[in-house]
Image (cartoon, rainbow, N blue to C red; front, side):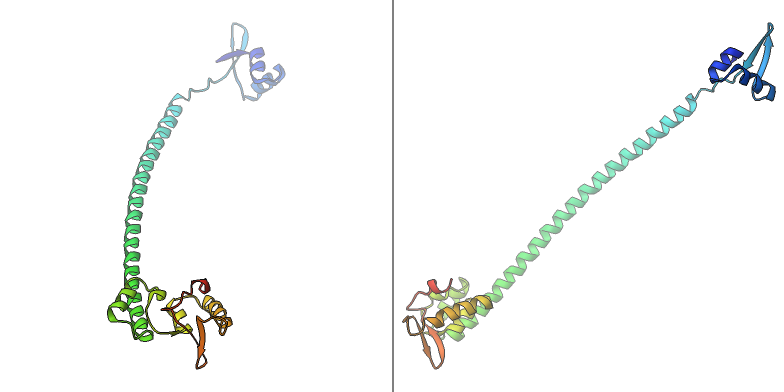
Length: 197
C-alpha cells in the first residue's frame, strides 16, 4: 500500500516530521512517483486461513466434548442402574436379617415364657411366641415384676421407672404385692396398662 506523507502521518497518528525521521532511519520504505514521496506500508495479510483453522479446531473440540457428554450420560445411567440393584440386594439382605432375628426372638420368647410361666400349655406358649408375646393375655399364676418387665423387653431406664411406680403401690393396690422380699404381679387377673406407660 502506498500513502503520501500526510496520509501516513494520519494513519499512524504521528507528525509528518516523525514520518520523515522514520524514512531516514530506514524503518519505513518510500518511493518517489511523479515527484511525490510515497510511503510503502505492508498490507496486513488476511487472517482468513488462521481463522478457518481456529474455527475448525473449535468445532472439533466441540464435537469431542459432545461425544464425552454422551459417554458420561451413558455411564451415569449405568451407575444409577447398578445403585438400584445394590439397594434392592441390600433391602433383601436386611429383610432376611429381620426374618432371622424374628425367628430367634420367637425362640427366646418361647424359652422365657416356658421358664417363667411353667403352667401355660405348650400350644399357648407357641401362640404367644408367634404373636411376639403380649404378657397381659397369658393365663398364669403371679410372676415376679422383674421377670415380667424383662419379658416385655423395655429399656433399662423405663424398667426402673415402672418398677418404682409398682413399688409405691405395694400395700395400697391389690394388683401389686411383696412375697419373700420380691415384688409380684398377676397378669392373669389384673390389667396393668395404666402402670406400664
